[in-house]
Length: 289
Ligand code: SF4
Image (cartoon, rainbow, N blue to C red; front, side):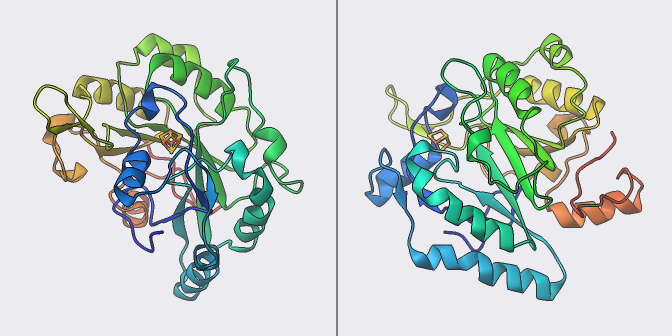
C-alpha cells in the first residue's frame, strides 16, 4: 500500500481491503486484477488488508498536520470501498477516515449504480453522522462510456458529499456533446479525471501488451465540456504513449493541464486568478478555462 504513488491525481493510495468484482466493460482489463495475477493472489475474493496498512493513515495524518498540509489519499485503488463483501469492516474504516482530517479521502466507487440502474445501497453504507458529507471526504465514480456517464452523472449528484469527482478512465468512446447537455449544468461536480486505459492485456495476434485505444478527440471533447461548465479537469494519461507528462501535451490543443500536482497548481491557479475564491474546505477544485 503506497506511501507514494505515480497516480497523478492523488498523493497516496490506501486499501482497507483488496479484491473486487468486475462490473462493466470499463473493468475488463482492470489494472488491479493484473497486479493480483502477477502477485499471485485471488482478485475475485475480497480480503481485509493487514493491521500495518490500517495504521498508516494515523501516521500520514500526523506528518501532514505537522507540515501544515492536506494529503490526498485514493481509497481503495485495488478494490471498491463499497463492495458488499467488505460490509463487516466498513464501519471501522469510517472510524479511521473520520479521525484523520489532514487527509483528503478520495473514495472512488463503481457501486453507485446498481444492476437495475437504480441508486444502489451506497446511501445505506454511509456513516450515521455523515450528514451532507464530511468536508475531508470526496466521493467519486467512473464513467468512460455513454451509458455509464448518463447513469453515473445522475446518481453521483444525488449522493451527499462535500466534493464529488468523476473518473473517465478508461475513456472508451466518444461522449457526445448532447450527452453533456442532457446531464445538465454539472455544478454539483468538482473535478473530472480523463485518461486512457492503464490496465493492459495481451493482444491475441501479436502477443504484445496493449491498451484499448482512446481517441484524443474523445478526451478533447470531454475536457472542453467540463471546462465550459467550470469543472476542474485533470488529464491523466494517453492510452498509447506511456509516461508522457500532461504538461508536455501540445496535442491537447492548449487546454490548461491541471493539475500535475494538485497543490502546486492550486497555488499557481490562485496567483493567476483561476480559482473561484478560497474554498472553505481548503481543497482546490474550481478552475475557469
Ligand atoms: S471496480 Fe475498479 S477495482 Fe473493481 S474490477 Fe472494476 S476497475 Fe477493478
